[in-house]
Amino acid sequence: MKASLQFKITQGLRMTPQLQQAIHLLQLSNIELNAIIQEQLDSNMMLEIEEADSNEDLSSTEIEKINANGSNYDEFDPNEESSKSDIEYNEADYVWNEVNSVKTTQKKNNLESGVDKTRIEEEDDKYKSLHEELRWQLNLMSISDNDRVIAEIIVDSLNDDGFLENSLNDVLETVKESLEDIFLEEVEAVLKIIQSLEPAGVGARSAKESLLIQLCQFDQKIPEVKKAKEVIENYFDYLVNHDYKKILKKLKLSENELKKILVFIQKKLNARPGSQINNSRVEYTIPDVNVKKENKKWVVKLNQHAIPMLRINTIYKKMIHRGDNSNDNKTLKSHLQDAEWTIKSLRHRNDTLLSVAKCIVEHQSDFLEHGDKAMKPLILQDVASSLDMNESTISRATTKKYMQTPRGVFELKYFFSSHINTDQGDSRSSTAIRAMIKNLIDNEPSKKPLSDEKISLLLKKEGIIIARRTVAKYREAMAIPPSNERKRLSI
Image 1: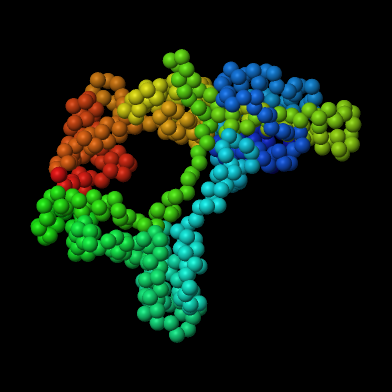
Image 2 (image 1 turned 90 degrees about the vertical axis):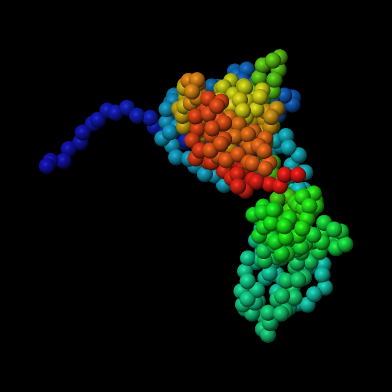
């Protein structure tokens, strides 16, 4: 076969670096985005933060004004390629779904974002894990070097709940790798030291042992303490399985006496003592958009403190000279072109995010008024069709993005849920149905909790046809135990 050259004309979209940047920025959370912006500010002299004139957030109208009155980027055209890229950028929505998600390493945000960063950093400095807290307490104690080594090994063997996962024999074997002539009795003695630390109950080998350790800190003459110790020590399995009738029979207690014991155990003891420290750190979520009611209408605005706005540094821009081919001038031109694309990409991200948020609020206004029970069915395709965007664009615009509402802060994904048809011909969202299930369980008779089958029948009376296994799935998703475990003592 004779080799030859052939020409072929085809149509296609070319993924330019600028288009890839626009897609990449859309899928980032505001924390990740701020880290990227800080990198850009550090590396590109043409970029600077545009200081906000007020504390008001930005609506779509205000964004349009900024876009219209912003820097005149057309004054300087570094090359024809830049103009050509604008056309490809405008067709971004058609190729969103062809691009794989890019995971970025979250870095510390050094930008001002409306949150007291000094306070956050102070909280981070105060935060200690359970293991760090126990080591700090050990450092204040006068113990031998050998005991300190053993204590360190025991602390390292504790899980986040404060329980010792390894057997003492396993701990002993680990200790022998560092120390000689150490016996099991010494390890047990050091474990007692660990169990004397705060929070009470750490270092236990079971929940039962942990609760008994915690009881030691109370006055043993208190009737509830004495009885609680007897219940935990001798009838712990009955307690765990809520078999209160057997406890009543074994201890010959009245229902009122048992109630006092159970309330004491529930309020004064912690089955996961380590969680008191490991859960103490505050997680900060900065909403991307704010929603509030103004003049009887729901108004959606971007949180300008979460999403900083950039502009071109006019001083450096004026230093560019046409016809100057020096390396310095080429560098300035390159930085300007990159800065322009970064700003355009950020504006496109903000426009898309605001449009999606407004569409969600329009669909879910009943939720904002009445809560979960009024949530309507909504899928990504619904929003994509309303905004004439690609479904993958909506997915990226709603992932790791948060909305501040009068009912709290929600991830945008929260407002999407599947639908279940009713016998009236309409549909309910799965979120609304979960709220109905929770309401039924919250108001069920304490002596006779509702089974999944009974809940299914009650929903059917409301016109909602839902299988028992679906009720079970929704119940489990809300971390609600089955009816046999919910059965409790009726006083």
